[in-house]
Length: 167
Image 1 (spheres, rainbow, N blue to C red):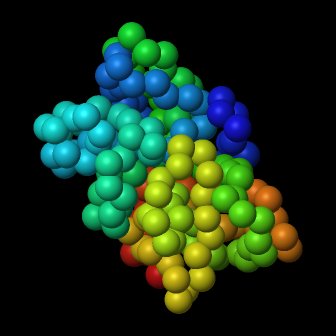
Image 2 (cartoon, rainbow, N blue to C red; image 1 turned 30 degrees about the vertical axis):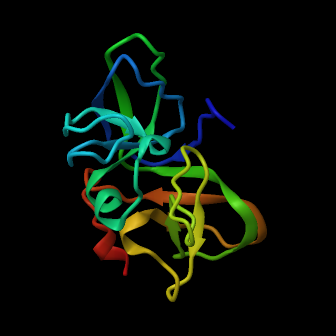
């Protein structure tokens, strides 16, 4: 599922994000900006570089809400320190961790509800009762029964929309 162009339509509101040379990013990865010490595996000091979701050490609502940047529009290979384009808006299609019914307006999270494990390119939908607001990456814009994928309108701290706006 890596290296997939998941973009469907809308204003992507690209931002340039610096990536360390020891980090591999694939197109379509959910991206975070390390602004808090010790949130990324093997990095102890906040460095304001971009990392894919799987690099998160401990997925908590504080880290997700404050550091979710968007979706990588291109990749970065190991050994190259560079800037990549990260989309902070638009509508994207992501595979669900498990097939389920999805409805317009459902909260889409980048973590599983139980273990709060982050995946680079899989998401989950949440009901109002089980949503973890801080791990929101967007909202569902299409209703479908037994869906394997969900169409998500991104909500990031850089897109001009807050996750508070969707509650």
